[in-house]
Image 1 (cartoon, rainbow, N blue to C red):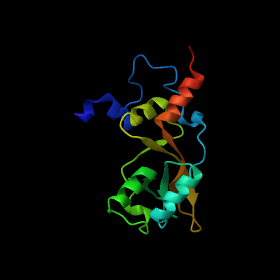
Image 2 (image 1 turned 135 degrees about the horizontal axis):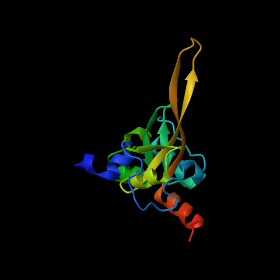
Image 3 (image 1 turned 45 degrees about the vertical axis):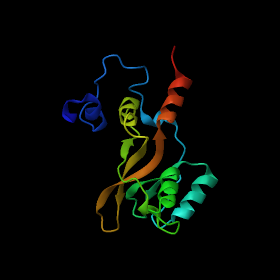
Length: 165
């Protein structure tokens, strides 16, 4: 059962310290990865535009975020091309037709250990930062801001550069 799986428990925030022999980087915060600001696409961007933008900017994937700040999912170059070539989407369709809406989020304050558990099953995680916003009538709400996209290669690069042998 997933409820008895320590990695599932860490990924979903139910456990913190589960590994007895943690690597040196296990408790370092995600913010130490020094991720670059992500390229963000709005939902009305077409598949054709998304392909061109991703290729021009040298990205494999980008979060799709509504103007309200709601994270809708991730668009990847390979999934967009595959969907168009298979006839499941047209170049003129909005990227929302080809996004992955199943994705993991991780906070800047979360540990690289938690990130490692997420990346065992997912190709990437969206790094978010929660921010309190106030509107004119005095009410407030928490808004998640996309801070970056992190892959296993980002984690591996960090670990290999800083490896304490």
